[in-house]
Image 1: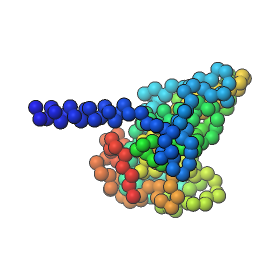
Image 2: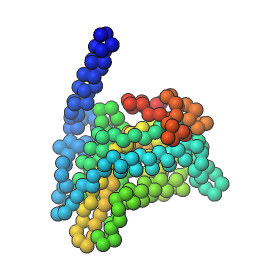
Image 3: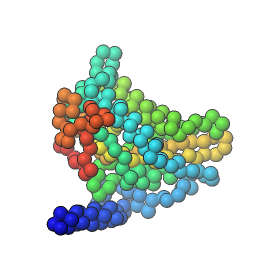
Image 4: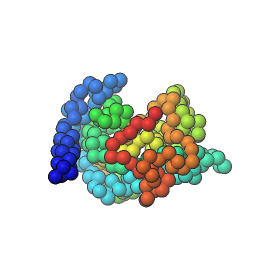
Length: 261
């Protein structure tokens, strides 16, 4: 009876937490920037989208494609198998988290994608995740040259990760404050060890004969200047809950978000 009561209480608390709507217009969510993209955010394609714009559904299979691609690439880093020059490799990661899909981050990403503008929003934080990061990608092509959304998703993710050639271990140890070289931020965002959540949205729009497809992905933690992108050390040596059986170089992910120092 006592056990049953405890379970019931936990279920009620869990349900209440899930059903509480976040007020994205709350200034406390964006203390250093704003407004929040989801404050009175778009629920349908915006005026820049034009007629015929379509929000591409990221179903469970596409969600798995996104998370699995990220985790395979994060594993490569975590094992120390990714070179940044001919014979030099990034150090292995001691606590690289497994990325899992987050519905709230995806919903917030959709508020950006529905604008049909290739630009980062100013704030996308949640009540739990207060420094949310973002990668965006776009491809314009003639409608008759259209390729599958799955192929495009893979192209976007690979293009972000390909920035590893522009970076090096010094950026991993301390994200630069004033970087004027080739872009590295998409790559470093992908391999942030303290980021364990991702949520994305995708739009198709454009005026015939051209079509544009825009992918927006939000991450649980952004690049933070003067902080490490990931903690270098023996692979998985500081995983709190053991390793992911599907990606052994990655740490199991907690249901709650922990911000490591």
